[in-house]
Image 1 (cartoon, rainbow, N blue to C red):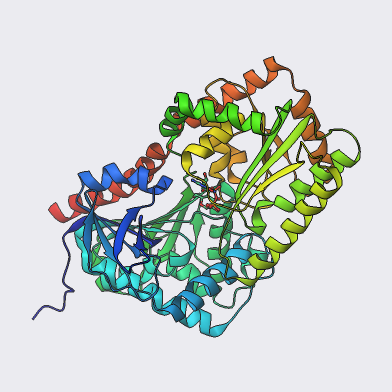
Image 2: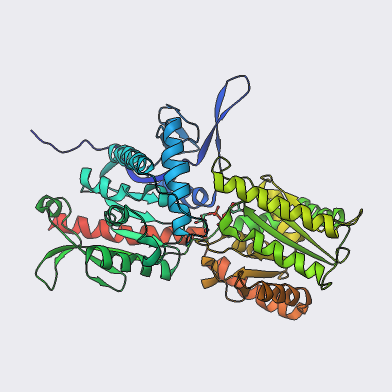
Length: 499
Ligand code: GDG
């Protein structure tokens, strides 16, 4: 009798905490599914359709027991989470332990053993579902920090699979990461993958260092040698194993940067639409036609440096370097993680600051800050990008920051100035932005003043160079480069099996 686990039918399985669809429950109790068009979905949709793909994830509603179904040509496999698991695994361990820890402890992480227990249990459930749905030798691509244990769990059940993992947020330096009571389990969990992708070269370096410090494995450049203890593993996956210089049978894992991007073309198309251009003009008009419109667009999150931005802006008003008739700031702060205490406190702080600045500097006809604590449609985002002379991205730590790339993509007129934090992953690529250290309030103020005064020729030169990068490296290229790296393993595996 064979003890082999049963396999599923899909050649490509994407696993992420949230599905690319939302379950919508109407007031009358009727249920429907609505696509949530994020960058990841846009990037993977064509590949998923072409390759018999399935997407495993949570529908965003506690205790939902929906059966697998098809949506727009993609097979959707819901994973159920109880209300308690949403609280412990998602709001707790993912968003109140890992999120602050991985963003350099900007807010203090909370460590609770029952949150960890729930993280373990939920990761196992995701791994089981992926294992049940993946075909023999399939590729499974696991997304993000909520699911770091899935690669190892999956490999234990299905050693035939080719497993990728991509971390959308930073990976911290060892001095910070080592705080985590479960640091070794997390590293071991990730090392279950064949390819581990990060946003920045520095993130991949931090990970490799943690591997050396915690497990003592050899790392060479982007390759990590993971000793193989179980011979069955070699039988199941003959590829990518070799004998190390110490005479040990090892499996090689790649850990390197794959900087994510956006669906550039879709933003260019939106920005070209006459109705969106008209809306951009209307936004400026509604603000009282100021000479300079500045914009911030962020989830309301303490990593985004919204408070630092407001401080710099408020001081510029106070110093008389700008005045409300001349300049205006729009801040979109879309609601996020509203049940987590740190986020409730952040909202209070930001809204107090906005209220103070507006109270001190607004006039009846002109507001210093137009503050929107609400999600806006994508069309409105594009109009805002077109309306803004200066885009302020002042994150204290950010994996990539897609807003910076969206602004650049939208500016087909080669105008506008991007002020960008060097602590956002995007700073590695968008070097012609005005790069700032948001902790340095004087430096931030100087960058804003410089952006306001920047001659048109310089704005255009910088924006052209920024656009070249974002047009060349879009999200399709990102997903292709990651999947190509995994595909090379699949081929190596088939070649091995054939010989
Ligand atoms: C994580 C990492 C990494 C925001 N408000 C509205 C809205 N948005 C859209 C933006 C953008 C996306 O949400 C936010 O992406 P970011 O990259 O800026 O930030 P996170 O949400 O923190 O994303 C980050 C990313 O994953 C991808 O790997 O870059 O570093 O933290 O697309 O436009 N969209 C609409 N209305 C809003 O009110 N329609």
